[in-house]
Image 1 (cartoon, rainbow, N blue to C red):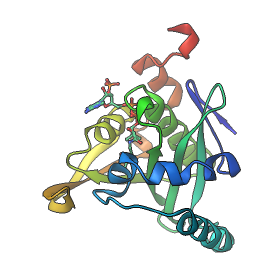
Image 2 (spheres, rainbow, N blue to C red):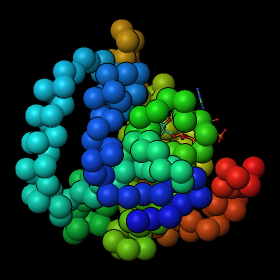
Image 3 (cartoon, rainbow, N blue to C red):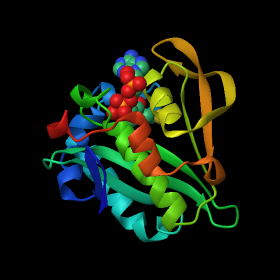
Image 4 (cartoon, helix red, strand yellow):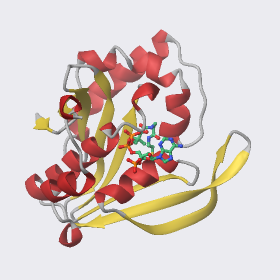
Length: 195
Ligand SMILES: CC(C)(COP(=O)(O)OP(=O)(O)OC[C@H]1O[C@@H](n2cnc3c(N)ncnc32)[C@H](O)[C@@H]1OP(=O)(O)O)[C@@H](O)C(=O)NCCC(=O)NCCS
């Protein structure tokens, strides 16, 4: 378990899987997938979960997947390192908070700080990147707060609710990362009971 200020990162187990159908059949999916809207039946979600479980071993060398859990034990969503390339020591970060009433409350930033620290200090990765829709202000703001820089912008890449939006790619080098403690301090992240 990786212990943060507002959240902990824990294995992505049953408590998270049980929420997936609700998370994916909501506004969350639009933002999490870059513009898709879909309706998933219970059977579809269960099939998808079974397929993922089958492929887990194969993916173990290229991805690490955590559940985001609040300090009082509520499963909020997921955060993962994907497409890890050991030779280059780079990885892609994907993040999703499935409960919209928690958006904008610092939870996503806290989770991002934890996974970046894990990637640099435990996995010895050198560079992390992520990509998001130009209209996804929350993801961009959270990335910037954690020290990512905008590195590329692919114009009119995603089609979201009938409108073209850019794909914005962010990168963070280990050499420029001041460390999680410094950022927690700089951002003034405080546990809820201390606010
Ligand atoms: C993106 C996401 C992980 C960010 O986590 P979060 O907990 O919402 O983010 P935080 O509260 O830590 O930071 C968000 C920042 O964006 C700011 N922000 C900018 N535009 C905003 C908006 N329209 N609404 C809310 N916050 C906004 C917030 O004020 C906050 O910055 P601040 O702390 O300087 O005020 C989360 O919102 C989420 O999961 N969204 C749905 C799925 C998704 O978009 N995933 C990313 C796919 S690439």
